[in-house]
Image 1 (tube, helix red, strand yellow):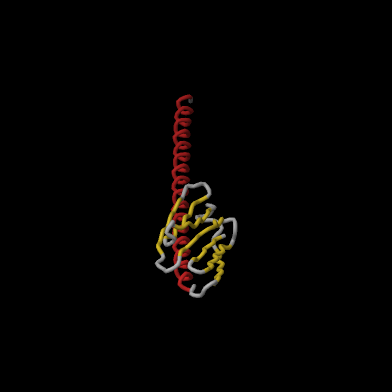
Image 2 (cartoon, one colour):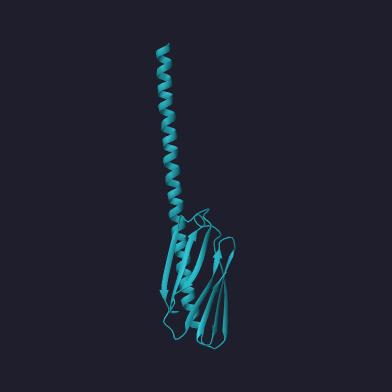
Length: 150
């Protein structure tokens, strides 16, 4: 009788250990898939913003012109990652860098591009995914274009 009890306890313990290991393995795999989805979505969002900037900068032709755009963006990436988008420019005023990062800094993406034009570009602002809409303001004053996101 005692040997049957010990055998049962050993088999039960092995079965329980197998369930725990399997659960942990699938949880880790699920988290990695979620992170990969968030990285892809952040890359797509930055690429779309880059294309919109390039297209809209080509629309500015007049002196003292202002263009205002509003884009609906996802509030969370990969089912739960909150994120921020920053915009910066180089000291020469020709290169723009878009930086996307999650609030826990697990995912960081940077997209840099150069805009060849006769005017200098000045950027400012940060977008937080707690907002439903990303506002993009472009304002040309003399030989300078200001880009502000919020």
